Structure formats: structure tokens, C-alpha cells
Image (cartoon, rainbow, N blue to C red; front, side):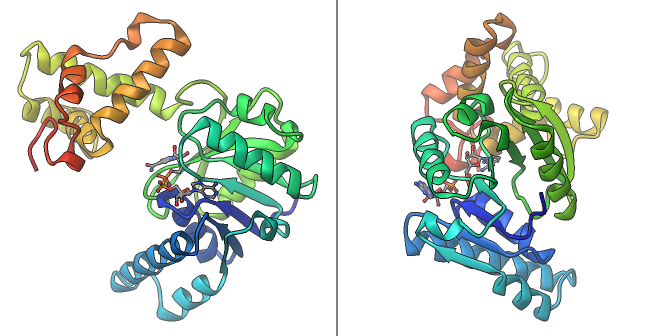
Length: 282
Ligand SMILES: NC(=O)c1ccc[n+]([C@@H]2O[C@H](COP(=O)([O-])OP(=O)(O)OC[C@H]3O[C@@H](n4cnc5c(N)ncnc54)[C@H](O)[C@@H]3O)[C@@H](O)[C@H]2O)c1
């Protein structure tokens, strides 16, 4: 399957990042959202991001213009019909994604591949909601998409090898490094990362070390660019807690039980940077 044009559903943080990643390597994109305002905001975000690359001498003004010209926008799924791969990057909600995917499935040519960028919903379950489960896959980009090198390529139980190979090849064309993952809660990276962050809350609550020293330890001792508690503040403590609750339910394994301190901080509304107070104050 030769992917010449990529369709994207959702022009938010991830959708516009994926659009940028495609456009800068010369792949035409059709980006769809629910309103003109949403798609225009997505395009403006890409333009701003490209301007920052120009300032850093990583892109020329002509390359920016060429990339922006490759991004078409629409509010109609019908306009995705010319794409060989459609990547769904809409709001994280099972009912919403199921509805979007069923609508797209009914409209798109049968050979079109569909991928979801979901962080937490089962790819196998989403594949089963379509009539093309063998041509359905997970493509989990990381935020910010233009900067982050990894794409987890997640095969559902039903995904064909041809679909996997085509999507992996596209990730390489985008300048990313794909890893192949079988569908499971948290895939690979978040499955390992989130319990590590949870463990940092246990260590903090036990008084073993201060937050600053825990973060310094993990930065200097494990070469992590940011400590786990500072990272929790960036991601949002509510998000970390919700993810742990999913692992606890899905794996039915007590090793995923959230630290009580994490629960307390979420209950207090100390969610991290977005509320200007989490483990640290901002
Ligand atoms: N933000 C992250 O760090 C991150 C990282 C990896 C994966 N993800 C996943 O990517 C997906 C998108 O997340 P985001 O952070 O970009 O969210 P976001 O809120 O920034 O953007 C979501 C967009 O989807 C649009 N949308 C909602 N309903 C729609 C519909 N019916 N049709 C078309 N568009 C619709 C919204 O208008 C919005 O613009 C989620 O599944 C999320 O789990 C997010």
C-alpha cells in the first residue's frame, strides 16, 4: 500500500502535530475537525511551530510555505476519501471515537487504512467497531509530535501484516523511529513510565527523600531529562491517576495500585502545572 496522502481526524495538539510532521516531509494532508475555528486553530499552531524552526535555522521560509500549502482542511469526513491512510486523533473518549470511526469506515474506500492515535483505548476494540479490522491499527505519536522521535505502531489482534508494514514505513518517512507493539493497556512506553511515576509518589510519601532529591536522583542516576515528579506535574496528576486505575482494572494486578498521596493530591485539586500547583508550585 503506497501512502500518498494522509487524512487526519482532529486538529488539536496531536492532530496538528501529525499534520506538520507529514507536511514537512512533503506528504499532502487533509485535516478534519468539527468546526472551521478548530481547523484554523490547528493550522495556526503549525504555522507558529514552523516559525520557531525558522528562528532556529532548522527550516527556510520557502520550506514553511511549501509545508503549509500541503495541509488542506475540512469539516467533512467525505474530504478524506483521497487519503490512503486516515489517522484519528480526536478527543480521548471511547463513545466518541467509536462513532467517528464508524462514520469514517462507512465513507472511506475499502482499501483505505485507518489508524487511531489513542493513548488508552484498546486498538482491538476500536478495530472491531469497523468493517475493516485487518486494515485498522494504532499509531501512537508522542507530544510534541514534531520533536518526538518515537511512534508506537500497535497491532490489534485483527491487524494484517501488510497494514503493519505500510504504517511502519510511513513512520520512517516522517523521520520517526517506529517500534512494533501488540495491543495491551498502556502499550509499551506508558505501561512502564506511569508505574515508575507512581513509585516516585510512594517514595515521596514514605519520606525517603524530598521531591527535589527524588527528581535529581532519577535525572543524574538514570540520565532522564526530567525527574518523575516534575514529569507528573507536566502530564497532570489526574491523568496519571486515571491511567493507573485503568491498569489496575484491566490487568487485575495490585502492583498498579495508585499511591495514596497521588489520590490525595488529585482530590485536593493539585493537578500539576495546569492548576499551578502539584508536587511543585508554579
Ligand atoms: N496530548 C498528548 O500528549 C497525547 C499524546 C499521545 C496521544 N494522545 C491522544 O491523541 C488524541 C488527541 O489528543 P489531543 O491531545 O490532540 O486532544 P485535543 O483536545 O488537543 O484535540 C482533539 C481534537 O479533536 C476534535 N474533535 C472532537 N470531536 C471530533 C469529531 N467528531 N470529528 C473531528 N474532530 C473532533 C476536537 O475539536 C479537538 O480539536 C487522544 O486520543 C489522545 O489520547 C495525546
